[in-house]
Length: 579
Image (tube, rainbow, N blue to C red):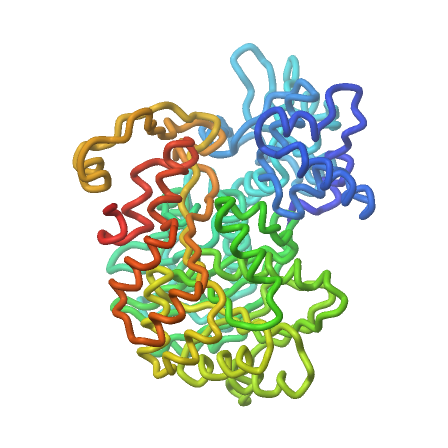
């Protein structure tokens, strides 16, 4: 697969030695990066032998488009988003030019204007090659800069004929396509199309690709910043869908002949200059098979606690809990709410203490952490969360991370480990911090043990950030205001929204931030848990002791202009919305 890391897109394109404003300073000035983070990244980039821009992209600290937009501004070159460039592309310009030649010069002709000027795209801001002007007999030439990922998307689109959508003939009946029985050209076409779809997802910052089959159509959706978005440019036929799913199955080590049962697998791939762990899941449906592909960046930098977006209050409670020699810390929330990221940020702190041995059992291992002994669960051979925790206790650990408490056996082993003087960190699926206590009781944990070993409960969600490029003051829906505030809006309270711009591709949101609450196990809370106080009474007690809820944190972020008020019903249940 051609990627943005190919020779035509070398690290020279991120060279910041150009005699203008430094790239890092430009990113700080644009608001894409904090000054402190930029200085730290500069030092780490220098130590690793990378240019600052390349390091920021590789570590996931700044989106690729923000880096290349700054590079274009630095060099005085127009920067283009691929979504807007599609409409300008004249695919006939590449029909009689060798793709090997175009890849060597790292240029793609886009359009010849009526005045004879040729627009060419490149991903290298130092590229001043003018050979295409002569080849296509243009009067002049203008270069526009694309990110390496978008440049490769454009290349695939032109090679596959995707600029105006796919127009492949249907090649299979509804039962599906057998990739093994196809000729080489069909296989190559499906593989190339799958690679192009991956690049599309990476270019859009998507976390998941949803491929859905209905009676007479195929639907492709990307989950971007937590929301599913239709991608209509991939106008797949049913036959092409079968071919792509078979490619995914082969990559993931699944059985391509089995279409009656769900299957799950995983593989790694280099996409858009980054390495990704890819999780594939197929599901039989009425008209064939659906498939979901999750993209997990392999080298994404683990966030520090101060970078998570926690309020100062929650950060202080979390850091203080990590200092304890023993006890249980639980991070709760739905799937995809950033629980693992929160735990990993804590592990970073714990791993720096050379007097402590830190062990983990995870499913899967998402990040590699220096000085931490990490184990991946394999339930099929008996290596479960519970059995691993029991085994860890014989290896003299100080800290144990259990990826998730899924059952009573794992919960009991976590509490036993905390009871015997170990600091235990884990996750659980619950709506809020207080309901976590009831969840542990419901799966059979003794109240006395819970009250004795619990240190801290953190509950969190991820909300979409308003794009800083198009943020404006707004007036939310009156019904929503009435539901959340139950009366008048506090004096001086402000609301914002994103209008939509090039940076966020018209969505008005860019990235996500955590909305969290933390409930420490105070002496009063421990006493009432042991007594059997109801969940509602525990909430009243927690509020009387100064509990700052997720609703409180969310409204603080609304007033700051970080998130829109409309995000609250998407991350909180109706009961949590009320004061």
